[in-house]
Length: 158
Image 1 (cartoon, one colour):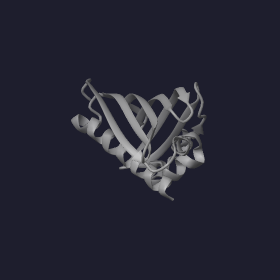
Image 2: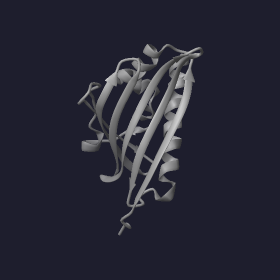
Image 3: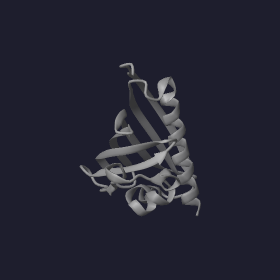
Image 4: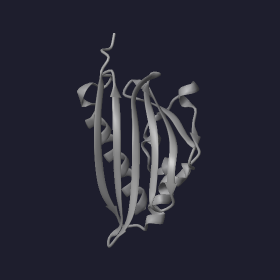
């Protein structure tokens, strides 16, 4: 049996992209754009309920998908709370591994016009549950978010 424990962590990542805030925002605002730069396309889409996909980018909307990776089926289930076009996205999400909730997070993505284009600040507060990913869970999330932002950079450069 898994030990019952909770790990809390907050991280913030800042990136600058040579694109306008509206172009960076648009990369988050459509399923087609997110699929082009997000990590979902790099993994096998899960079958069955875990493979259900939704993308409803609006306050109160939901984003849902499942992928197979590292020998498990992962499910991402998000709710959008605050969206200010070209400025801010606030949402919460749960992550599941083989239908076991492994984390609950709140993320804020802020976009600010800068001399080089757009400065994106991603701040996330996570609760990692029952040691599923062990003490390295927060570092894994930071690494995964950096990979996503690298994909966004490649997408915006194309």
